[in-house]
Length: 271
Image (cartoon, rainbow, N blue to C red):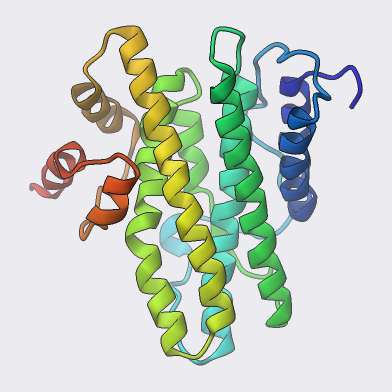
């Protein structure tokens, strides 16, 4: 990659279709930045959609079969496959943020933080893909949905909107539901899968914290009230609902207070 730029390299990750190769490329992107491979950030810009493998088949969210965690291998494979799909989307979301929004007027720490996110999302996908292989399955064996990428399309025009929705809504939701999945996997005798989810959970707290930190930084830079702006952006760009129960302890560790998200949760439940 000699003579390349960070944004050009990020676009190469986004246009890599094979899932394992994409995850590994995200990890190399971070390593190359740290080694000084890139002489400059380059010009921002990203493809409208990242390249993806031919499989899994993408369905509407309502058409994807529900998964149950039990002693049957098929149920655990379905769960891990769904999580692998989320993590592959997370790779693209982190790399897209860099390719689309990285510029010389952002602090170097911003670039470093989001490269860390991309690197760890790549690690998460590979951990899940390896576990699927141990269970006799592979990513792509089951259908998945494309709902997560809608958040990228909705926020492609504005870094503040992206920071409001992806880490503070989508990834924060993972903090709410992952502890229950870990407990269930332990209960059905799958400690190997549970250990992977523990790693993902701990690192996702950090990802939400990174998103929150740079959201607040950008609000300050633009002279905006963080809470009111967040409510406005989520109402405008997030199509789903903020569903309780919330993992208040993990959210607070990541910088999210109940006063930030509870009003939206109540609002979305009103008839």
